[in-house]
Length: 336
Ligand SMILES: Nc1ncnc2c1ncn2[C@@H]1O[C@H](COP(=O)(O)OP(=O)(O)O)[C@@H](O)[C@H]1O
Ligand SMILES: O=C(O)C[C@@H](O)[C@H](O)C(=O)COP(=O)(O)O
Image (cartoon, rainbow, N blue to C red; front, side, top):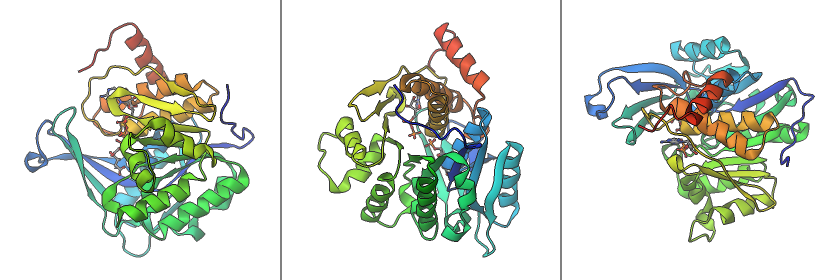
């Protein structure tokens, strides 16, 4: 059964809009941030990670965003280009804004946290006029990520991108990517998330992210089926609710709840799971695979990333995902 139809005549497989940042991941793991002395620098930002994931899987990709006019901004642009990601709509800020930083603390395979430095971050300064309609017109898929809705003018830039995507028939994916510290109030957050979600074909988020969106609704049992059903009255064809290690469930308008097996992983850190899962899942759906097979692919990609030190740099190729699945099926990989 096909739930989403992609405009196959378009040359660009995937475009994402939003945050381009830096991850500084603790080198000394299994200790708190207070005792961590050194970090390794990677490109970060959830939509950037997903785009890197899609490029590694062999797709034609582009990014729409704004970088700081500094060494960090140039590092990000160079990394995207080395990964064959089109940067014609990566705009350089001219106001002195800086690159957002995410310092990660890896206390244990299950206890990780992120300290974000996002004052005057360049990515939130992308304006609607800077979003290239011609790029979105070429794309089969546009991915938006919730954090870009947190402030103007990036919020308006995302809504402008959504309107171009609708006009030109791109499939729209919404990764909720809710980072509370970027927002002023819970009411504002829920309002803009709901307005954006109405326009999207595929919505992916954790149970906690959907809880935030249901602030003005009644779902006392936090029932995934009730959560998903709302969006089928708008544009959604697939709604995925993620439950960490327990796996995820994908709902479709026919009322089916699709589940897929998850895989064991030797976990180094928990973050990066959602981004790699999104890349693997969207890739699978774009290949015309079933929802279950696509979810399985996303889960395997997630296992590879959480077993590694980085998020972006660890994004697997298709051969690496296939190999991981085969090794799991042969019982060669066990959980940590
Ligand atoms: N510890 C784990 N072991 C195996 N797979 C995992 C683990 N944690 C996450 N995953 C996989 O990654 C997917 C997304 O993870 P999740 O933690 O829900 O997202 P996010 O990183 O956005 O919070 C899960 O549905 C699951 O397939
Ligand atoms: O999104 C960020 O700004 C930080 C990411 O690069 C990061 O490492 C991360 O948190 C990944 O998020 P997840 O995939 O939702 O766990």
